[in-house]
Length: 343
Image (tube, rainbow, N blue to C red; front, side, top):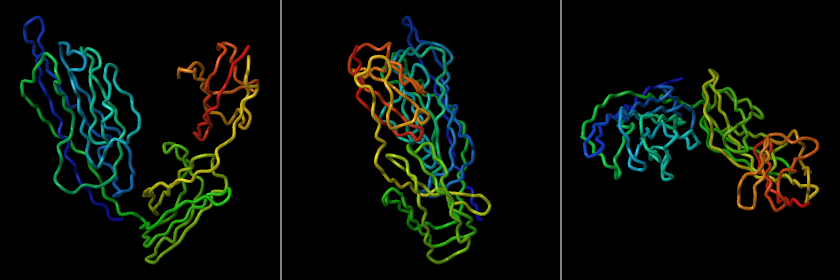
């Protein structure tokens, strides 16, 4: 299989800043750009999201204090290897601007920035190869109203991230999924197959955790239209997301676009309701419950558990009143019920 390597330059920027303390200026050296991709080389499949990784970045400061909400830290990522949109841990004392995009993430210091360095681990994925000139991406810090100034000095170093363009084992021209009775039927077609081995069918309830539910052999070598189908005889209640994992004979693979089928949701009832000491779930086995949470009338979580006993949910410590009970099953499906506690 033909492989072509392209490389994308990553510029890491350093800034030196001044802060005014007791009417005298004190220089603060900030290295805003300890950043790198891991791995350093990703496989890219055109518009098909494939390999995932982490972008690491930090801003180090030697001394002084920068007041809250006066420093803006911006992390620019390569368009070919952007943030996945998944949640990640924000360093203490920092918050992310909700207008952040997959290629431009903005953070503000919500407390005094003293000596601790903010350190970021941002989940990324390769979505395309790159062949045009390198782009300057990295991390920068800006003054947005603080009593300190930028002295204009920049120390630039260059790293790189590789994006490998790999020919797909098949040319997928269509992929659909539809509900038929109690079954979800998947259909797809290819116009060309080279060194192809199989199609693995994956299913998810939330788009994050995927499970293999079947496999269909390919025609291996073909230059004519080929049609395929796969029945999911036991789809999950609620949302079902499907994708194809197209696997080559050397185990190179790519993913298709995602298709969705929605079935009738699971019917769950609480009894007794109103309840005094315990409440049980009807319509779902305790072993199928992933998480149970009870919220007060103003949205505060007052109870949470990853297990449900055969006796039910212990509510003896909760005050009488109206609550919302949220049940998440092992497939990620969420069901919300109104619960009344009365004694």
